[in-house]
Image (cartoon, rainbow, N blue to C red; front, side, top):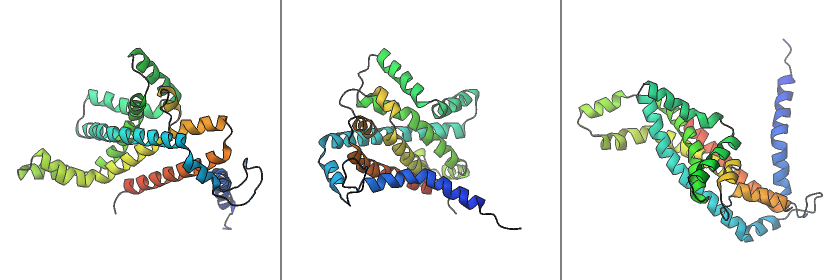
Length: 256
């Protein structure tokens, strides 16, 4: 049978479609031209300007603070939710399972509007706290799903053996659960962190004045025509996101 080159050509076209815009973005971030319409030579001026922009530094700090806080909350709540779903079976748990899955299928715009209405009706002031709570709502679901996958390979007989030997839950958590489930917790945390720093729609709706994050900042800079600085910022932002995704995928991969 004569080998076909169609699969190879299709794969190359798909990769070109996906990564050519990213490659152009990276190249333009080193272009000395102000608007990128032509190549004026290699330059780091846009990265230097990015380093001097205090407003971008403030947005970066807000983004990291929100991402770290929502990651911590979602890891704790998501791990507990996954443990309950794995260990117990009841009608209430089926409802719990549906509630965990719901944020994964609800559109971001609908979730953002719903959370905005909730905060407004509660009389809460829109600030970093409301953004952290909003991010926790969808990050929690991803952490729970990662942990459920990890718990499927967990041998609960080790807990029974430890209890037979007189170990309490403190020792069991410290000596058994954390070492065995640690990679799943780390993968869920990295995934939650990536989703949080990358979110725009929900953040845009539930954040108040002075609480701008990097995605929202990039959007506002695009409206003010700062293309080359945006390119430099996007390259750094994209590199961090890719690194987080790669690390989380390595941790989710089952041990051989």
